[in-house]
Image (tube, rainbow, N blue to C red; front, side):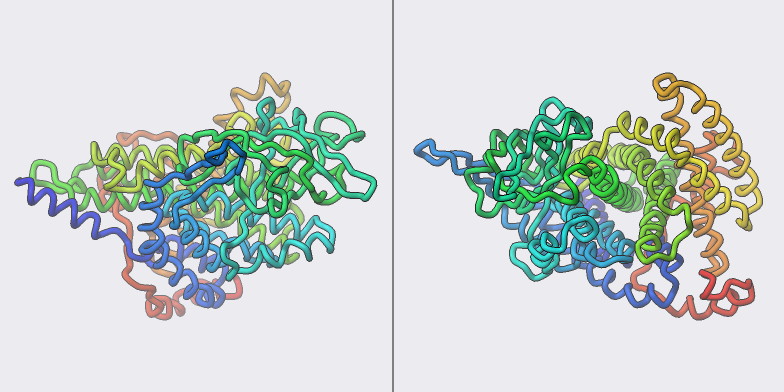
Length: 589
């Protein structure tokens, strides 16, 4: 093969990338149709279609250019006077404006819109963090917090501008909780808040790892003077940047490995005017019940998007790149890598979207009694498992591309690699999350309804082998967890971590199995059922290729995704009769 022909193949590979991330993702379309129902899905599909095209074209190109131009810090003027400025490339604002106009943060102001916001966020995160994916998540969390926990006067003061999709530039939020001596252990915060005689609150102290350091509105934890020490003494406050240039002082930048467009640094609060969110005694509770869970669910969506994008890039590379005059896609080792990537990405998306669907049901009051417990544990397990699966998928993609996987001007993979490392740490590192899960299990028995739900999801499955084996694994895992929780917390922590990963993988399996059954009956398609079985064999049972019947044929089929060029309603109409004959009418979706 000549160099010119090889370059032609590379060019064809790049041209083969989707021009619309929504149209190209049949798995996303079908998951949403199942969770919403066909009527609501069709109502939202046009919005997702338009946004998916914008993300795959204009925003993807803008993010690639933005990655070459990190923020420029100008903390002092030429005379040495502090000016605390950070200058961003114009594409940062362009992307932020497009995401705001699409409603990614604004939908947080409406109850029951989490699934739609999640689908939009997932599509947006295909371009990497781009200096905006984190701020969008934090802004959405701030909106929800103001909506649910703030006083009416505070809501009226700040929510209208946060919810305005046409505001230029859109307001962004941030969470500044960490300090040099305290990361997730917020009880060690030394920043303090006091109230003056006029009933105004002020904050003093230093915050570290302030991502989106120039945010317009900042959530800050601080010890309330006279309230006590540790977590009990924490209050949660909203600090506006406007009008306080001398009270919010950038101490220094903190160069971050990953998310190069995001400005991160240390910030000094010097009698900064602040507004308490809820009772000042509830600061830690609000962080753990509102702020962190919101960030963790957004992290899981971003990981799912990164995994999907990595798979798309690697799959099309394998279709166009040749070795010994044979396209890579024909080699079994490549087929296996692609199948693993595709099944992991599908599991992440399926499980995370179902979690957001539960949140919609909770907000509109159409939920099971145990839904709050399911959401609590499912969110924590997502923060533990999603970054780990995304890590493997992106790594496999880079390996499949060989040296080309390391070239930052050829694909987004190096940026996805850096970004996902940040996602894994924004809302709790694995050890912190394991501790939080163990406390949820011990104090609230949160694993019991979660396991019961997985069992209920698996029991009606029409796929006998998958149902039987998955239920057996669930029963075994339930017993082991019961025994572990009889041990002291420190001793149980090490053996608990891999069991939590298996528990979440069983949940992912159950989600894929439900969707697989629905797609078989509704769409006459068994591909998601096959993905569910493959994921279960690999992730839960740990089976090797030699132990799986017809393995080579499986991976030769599953390695390739279905890439529709348009949204096809006709096939759906043709299968309506089969759906009704199966006794699963639209009202039972």
